[in-house]
Amino acid sequence: MTSSTSSEKQPLVELTKGVNGLEKVLLREVRGSSAEVYLYGGQVTSWKNDHGEELLFVSSKAIFKPPKAIRGGIPICFPQFANRGSLEPHGFARNRFWSIDKDPPPFPAATSSRAFVDLILKPCEEDLKIWPHSFEFRLRVALSPCGDLMLTSRIRNTNTDGKPFSFTFAYHTYFSVSDISEVRVEGLETLDYLENKERFTEQGDAITFESEVDKIYLSTPTKIAILDHEKKRTFVLRKDGLPDAVVWNPWDKKAKAMADFGDEEYKHMLCVEAAAVEKPITLKPGEEWRGRQELSAVPSSYCSGQLDPKRVLLGS
Image (cartoon, rainbow, N blue to C red; front, side):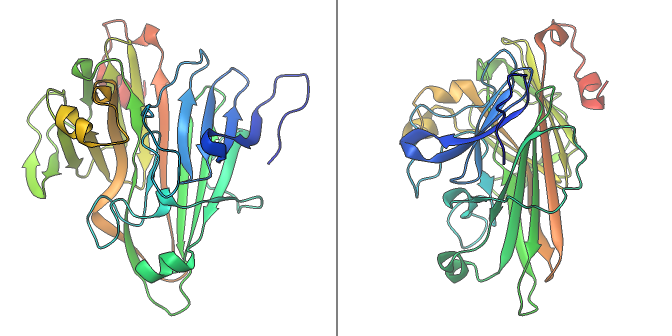
């Protein structure tokens, strides 16, 4: 990993100190967009556009102190999503220190980005006691020249005993929104979803928010749009290898019950998560799984009241 020292504007990759002295990597593109990634959790905690506007939500009460997970940004849920298994909720990857992978194998995703960092996580003795499988988790976080944020995960079964393992996964992305009551999610209409382990079918033209939402949408499209009418901004989430999508907002009662979450902060965040939950991914020894998420923020001029979400979803 190198940092730019030239007087010319170049992409910047810099290892620095964050909250409570925790190490983080700063990525900055030439047009001014930026991202921050903490080695604790392998977690993106900031993504700003070229105007310096923060696009991700991190709670003002987030506790940047291990072993507590950081509330906000993009936590990595692995090897278990939520409480769907015997491990602690959302698994242990978000509670571990990752290392910088200085000599990673080539990543298959073609990208023009030079502002990226490769992280790696391998199980410690404690992990093997609670989840007895050897693995290698490589994560690339990249910022494109136009400010898009890309996360690519590669998980390999490195067991030497011939045993396969299964896991569930999510990029638990917290988007920053102006007012949750003014937000719509497009692209999940008519799909089946799980709520409290029961299966339903989405009936609305779009997902809007008037109370707590905690749903796992199944067999979802590769593109989902999140429309923030007040900010005149649309997030577009593109994903690959992740068939499901989780939509979550805790609303007022659950917000007040969380020590690391402000009582009113639910109004300014929304989680839309690229995930593999319903059908666990199974890897035989030597096999590798890849899951990718790309986030972009459509500029306000695109959202002037004439936005056709279908055009955004189709990429036009």
